[in-house]
Length: 353
Image (tube, rainbow, N blue to C red; front, side, top):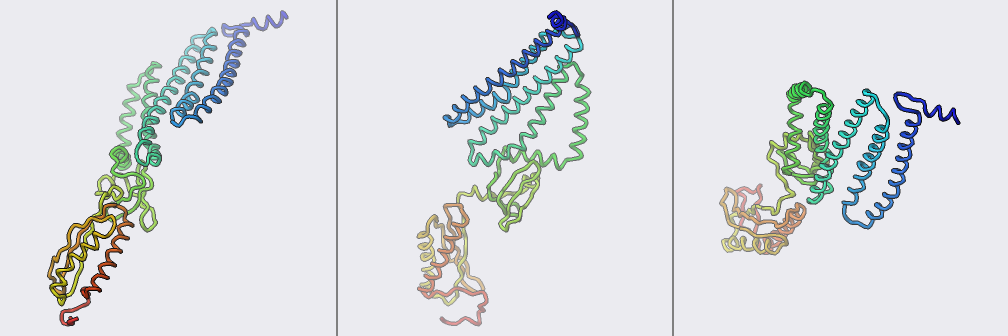
């Protein structure tokens, strides 16, 4: 018994063995209690989350698991260590470790908060779940900025001079920016695309002579799937400099076409053509007739110009309607014995049919 008491009474670095064992016991028992509490708490939270239709419960669970319990564990360890008598060097180590841990959790909390705010706002937009995939590139940049600023503040609070570091970072940043102007330009234009939203994933666009549907918007490039199946990769800076036609946001489609008939067509038949075409277009679905006129006397025939609008932007729907209109015009002209002009016709070959 005396030997045990003597052992417990031995001092190492100004603390008895009993003091060390007490601090260790507090840590072990505390962590065990926190673990049990975590299981009980999460069982209740999961039941609550199953009944809730909102995403707030998911945020609460992630917050408790990612921040609440780890911070509670750290506070327990910190309190147990501080119950001991520490030397100046050990005190400094604990202080630095505490500052590093607190800075780590604060930076993570700021990053997670920003991500949750951006995600919640993007999710409310049209095709929000698809747009959330684009947040990854934005969050990389935000996290880099947060961690750099956090590291600078940490070093400053620990007593280190950050002026030299900031000067070095500034000079290095300028050198990197000059060496990678294209990359920096594409990165900046990624933010322009993300916030200005000239197009989004899923939009069908035309850029110069390239057509396709946007599959992915990255930090440097945007990828399109062309109509013929291959993937087109375009730098973000090229996209923001180009005239982009976004067909998905097209509310109406203007269609203009011509009908050419032969000079032998009787005047009364020519007078009928605009009305025939007007009736056909007005009878089609999702169309708004604009005009049909006998517009030109050309070297080889008589040209009628027709303009109408599709009230829906879908391209396949437009082609179906245009096909229907063409077939009905052919049928109507056959019924009225109106002959189309064939480009191979020559003036000397016209007959009187």
